[in-house]
Amino acid sequence: MSQPIAARLSAIRQAMVLEGFDAVVLNPGPSLPYLSGLHFHISERPVLFCITADDATIVVPELEAQKLNHASFPLRSFTYTENLASWQVAFDSALAHLNTSGGKKVGIEPISLRVLELRFLEAALPQAKLTSCEQLIAGLRMRKDEQELRLMRDAVEMAQLALADTLPHVKVGVSELEISSILIQRLLAHGSGGELPFQPIIAFGANSANPHAVPSDYTAKEGDLILFDWGANNQGYFSDLTRTFSLGEPGETLRNVHDAVNRANAAGRAQAGPGITTGSIDDATRGVIQEAGYGEYFTHRTGHGLGLEVHEEPYIRSGNDSILDIGMTFTIEPGIYLPDQGGVRIEDDMVITESGAESLSTYPRELRILPV
Picture 1 (cartoon, helix red, strand yellow):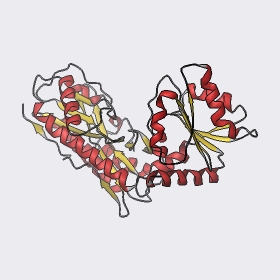
Picture 2: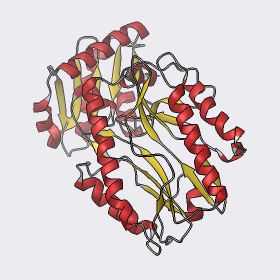
Picture 3: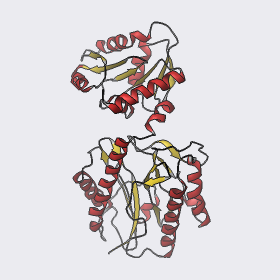
Picture 4: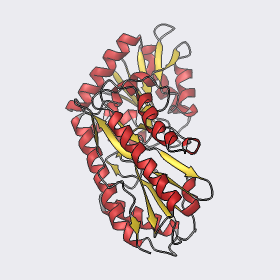
């Protein structure tokens, strides 16, 4: 068994015992490869992976069975054909060992589990107590090991190199969609997987005041803010960065906004460390922006966890008492968004270390004026 997978299976089994779970079941999504090393896409055919204290079982379509040759641990497999009647039979057979008595506590991930797999699961285990185990799994996934951190560092570097290659193409008259296309090409050229963490947000001028803007045919004009929110995929591990530039001189107000966001980002990074609550980081960034007079224009949380998903635990939001621990990775991304004028966001990818927090991203944060 590969060392990371063995350690993760051991850790989740220990956690299951502590929380009283008889089994944990997963369908395709980030947690399945994390705990098994096996990769399956969501499709019209159901897949279910089941972990118990001393057993691992998987249900897959017959055409996917060859993937199981790569399992690094003992795995019972049950396959089904294109005959729809065989699907429930496979689920029933795979989960029969849990059906010896009623009331089994079976962990599920409500955010990830589809109704498709849920219905087969319910039919196979009608007496089971299906209970969320999201916090149990998040407790493992939040703490990245050295291998995971290497992948994330490289994902950050891919993204930073792609941005550097793209910026020279930003000129008056170029559209958001054109720049988005160039950026995606450069991400792939620098080694990113084709399944990006998200469609890059490229927003010019007033469009940058929309935190989740979608690239459009709007063309850049002199004085526009130029916002990039983008990331790379390195073997399933993501980066997620934001930088904001100006195409020519932006004017005093937008300069002041950028300065406030930059200082807020710095305050958040300085606040982060082991034993610190995630809510206190949000308080640090928000305090700077409120003091600058823009509090009502900071309309989202300060950040979110990052790894196999672009949004995962821990969430950096006000009032969250979750404690940061060594190996946790997350974003710090304060922003100010002035309707009809423009918005600024500066986002870094962080990891908690023994002595504090390190920014995996190093791209300059100061306002850069792009030539017209």
